[in-house]
Image 1 (cartoon, rainbow, N blue to C red):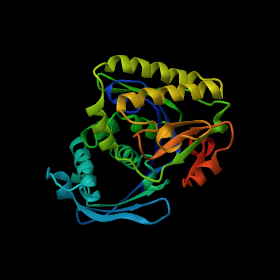
Image 2: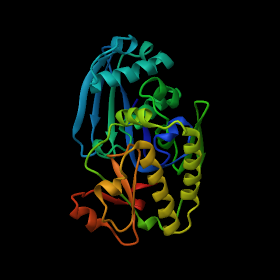
Image 3: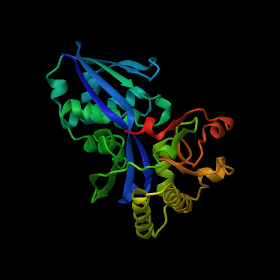
Amino acid sequence: MKQTFYSNGKLLITGEYLVLDGAKAFALPTKLGQNLIIEKGANKEIIWTSYDADGSIWFEDSISFSDISSERNSESESVKSTLTAILHEAFELNPDFITHSKGYTITTELGFPKSWGLGTSSTLINNIAQWLKIDAFTLLKNSFGGSGYDIACAQNDTPILYHLEQGKPIVEKVIFNPIFAKNIYFVYLNKKQSSKNAIASYNTNKKNNLSRTIVLNDKTTFDVLKATTLQSFAAAIEKHEAEMSIILEMQTIKESLFPDFNGTIKSLGAWGGDFVMAVASENPIDYFKEKGFRTIIPYKDMIL
């Protein structure tokens, strides 16, 4: 019997990095996500095939049950070793899928290009957790690590406010349906940023007065959520960018790439890659295309 599981992708609008230390983050689940399809197999192994959004196969291999159940630590960071490590942590939480099975044929199907950084890993982890009826936040913590906001997006079909309280995820559904949504665009920067490397850099650079910084972040996050005009939304976004620029000791993305842009630009998630959010009173598509950025997605086409 075939089983299919689905999870939403994610975009982090505020609270990047700081969410790891308890700050409130505003995040949006995306219309694009990932499927996980489970079928019966044989030979005490998993035949795994992963498809990118264009239908091409980006990973294909077999993984033995013995490799999943054992605690072998591979020094490589190949797709296979990473996937095996996730499945091992899943096995630790629910061994029945190995001990009570002859094998599986598993397929994943991305609804967005893998390079976009909308949550290839988080959607996979949440799908595996759904399949095995285990806690996705625990599986994330035991495998990739991270704040878990992306798991919350995978599980919810509405905008969310997310934070960690004594290490536990707190998810609050919020309403965000601004009249200026038509003025918001998401632009892909033609390169995927490593979240793991970005987090390591943040941990090195974060300041001693972190509690004050978190208070500022939370106020700005609420200002973003409460904004009723394009101008107040843009002002709150610009304030957030300025605050993060100081913490990360990095130029804002507008300063470094788009200084002549007539509007506001916000880095999303890991600074320096993936998508940015552009806010403008006039349609900015031609501007970004002239700069060499051809993936420009209006808010209504990206967000649930």
